[in-house]
Image (cartoon, one colour):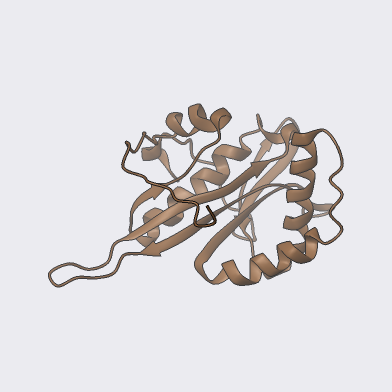
Length: 183
């Protein structure tokens, strides 16, 4: 799937077109997420946040806020969801990632190149060593390759830098400038 990016290929797609594999007696899969997954993705994002903070986060309107964000972002992002379970018992979301596609403005003598910004990658701790992060990233890289992206960019957390470097990402230099327009 994404061998050139330093990612091991995940075995055959299951009948839903998801990339599926077994780890520790669990069936895992990564598939494209769609509007039917919004509630599950919001729940997963909440679980992941609470796992990281070590406490429940009191935000009763979060799921509605997440759904509104999804509706705005969905036309310009591709989303994937990682799940654990089985066809018989059903699947539970355990991770997600998305890719924001930007197409540069064309100019005379050149066409606009596609660039992808990898974002919002998160995996529940119990599945971090089960190949889920690698499988999610492999899905993004394969998609970017299929869409002809010129490059993929991301802003990794300090804890994820080594993972992305093992996958073939490199530092982009010091050319990125940031401004907080509220300041």
